[in-house]
Image (cartoon, rainbow, N blue to C red; front, side, top):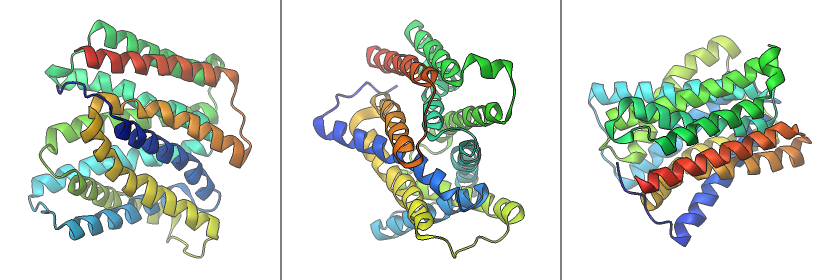
Length: 298
């Protein structure tokens, strides 16, 4: 496991920028869903982001792998990191608030620690990490609300869909470490998005039919944001921050995303979150800070 890196002012600035970009993506996705169906919205996200990153690969003259094994890994990565979570979270956003979606999405880091401990010897679950994970799960439970555990409705299913998406993200992180280490991050991201486009395209055509291109300007603006800026651009920024800050510090971005999404959800869609959502996020944030501290100590 790599040692924790010191966060320079520039690393802090880019980490915060990444959090703002990803936080705003939740409201952009929700705006697009007012006009286009779920699978079509996901297809737009992965297709345009894929094209943008392959252009970057071409401009930089990066080597593109030809091994079937690597492309098979891209396909699985596209399934775990894009197709499954993007679809589940977009569908979930139809039934729960944007801000709550972003809070539940922060559980990705908690599941990531657990899954890493299962697969990698250098990511053992220490006492401090166990406390962080426990607080993380408690925060998620509080944010969902105890009453939703007693009554099972469409909103409950939507929340579970978001959580399932975070598990898929965490599995993708382990898969990438096992199968894609050593590749250029930009090529890996472009290959992953190619895999997810291959998977999403037939599903979108069967479920939603041919995409309608005569869309309102606000819908195209939302698509452009979450596909080109919050997916393609964010991947490029993510790897810059990863190189500067390290994987442990990068976890802090999950603390920036929900406040941005909550504020935008309130301003753009007049959303109001219940008090337990804020309490749940506070407990989850403490858990994430403990996880980050424990990594710096290991």
